[in-house]
Amino acid sequence: MRPGLHASARLGQELRTNPRLYQAMDMLHMPLLELQQHLKQELTENPFLELIEEDEESAASMDSETDASVAEGAERADEDEPIAPADHEAAEDESRWEEFVLAGEDTDRESVAAEEPLREAPVAALAQGLDEHLRAQVRLLDLSDRELLLADEFIGNITDEGYLAASLEEILGGINAVIRRAADAAGEDRDPPLFSSPEAERMLRVIQGLEPAGVGARTLQECLALQLHDAGLAGTLAERLVRDCFDDVLAHRWVELGRRFGVAPAEVQAAADGLARLNPKPGLAFTARAAEYVIPDLIVEKIEGRYLVFVNDTHLPRLRLSRSYQEVVRDRRRLDGESKEFITTRLSAAQWLIQAMEQRRQTMLKVMHFIVDRQRDFFDRGIQFLRPLTLREVAEAVGIHESTVSRVTNEKFAQTPRGVLPLRFFFSSALKSAEGEDLSARGIKATIEQLIAAEDPHRPLTDQALAESLERDGVQIARRTVAKYREQLGVLPARLRKRL
Image (tube, rainbow, N blue to C red; front, side):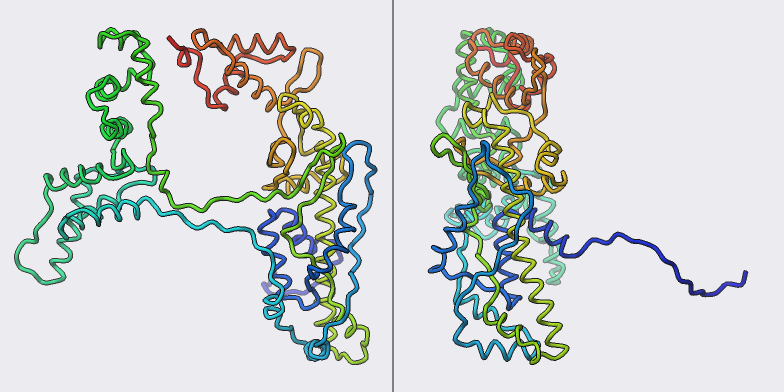
């Protein structure tokens, strides 16, 4: 066959996702602060959107009372109705708006938004980082320029946890290489003054003398020793444990260590308890990071014995269609083709955004209603009564897709009588009880934690003893499952928890 290009007609069906559907799914996935920024951007770009004034909030708040519903026996609406645009008086500069619309151009929404500021969430200032904290202390010392250069090289090799990440040889090699390159660039004939090992040793002691205590250590053992020395505990039993037999301390060999130092095993254990109160990562207290604020997306309140669910949208701008632009659109005879296309696109986008926001609210309410219904025992009696729950169960009960439930619960928080909790908290796997009832794995972990907290410290409960105790309460669980849950809780095994 001769190669070439050929044209042919083919009839077929193809599934395509509406771009607005993608945007709606993104809005459902967005946390509260991110959604706030998204709405601000839409308000700036679309002239058909405007903020509801604060003096009109009282009228809007009466409608928002319908957002709350009782978690027990409340009737659910099968279909959501879009928000109807609220009426308001036309702006005084309506004629200027008409000129923009009829010209097919966008209005300068930045000036409008500047007159109607949105409520911003608090932003935390960055704390001073560890490197800046160390350099500030070094500048207060009586050091020469040469020593300051070496000190800066040391500080540059300290991790956020406060440990020196490079050996002295590597630090010397790096700083001396810089000095050689500078000498070559300057065209000097004589050998440059390189740093020596004694200078590096002296500078290491300077760095390790800075705050926080333990900074500049190369190992955990050295970090604890520096903190003991800073606390005036040099030469004590705790310092000897760290210096001479640190591995035995980690293995909790109290009897052997007591014989070695000629003291009672309980005294060795008490000294080790003091070591446990030291900071193994002293630099993290100075790591520069912004504080994270959590604003709950949903609020669950118990009022007169009933649980009510609200959407916390106080931080979101309340949007509606602009009355001025709607008046212009009604007179279609004044619109040409380009202006008509511009108005149709922007008006449709504004209407869709308002409807998408309402759909988001209703979806979140439906999901939270079901969670409150399912987890009523948890809200009344505590975490031990948390029931197992999966995304599929919620999706089938609410009548939406499982991926939609995942988006609703992703990075969302609820303010409840039990505290501010992520929505993912209410989902956990199931274990069977002796009666065949499903039990939440998260609730069983809480029970294990309570059993360990109430145990005799001289005779701690083993994993097998914990499993037997749970079985007496009707929970069918294997010892290895108890061990897995205990490790997830960060609890040591019984041998290492035993007190002498």
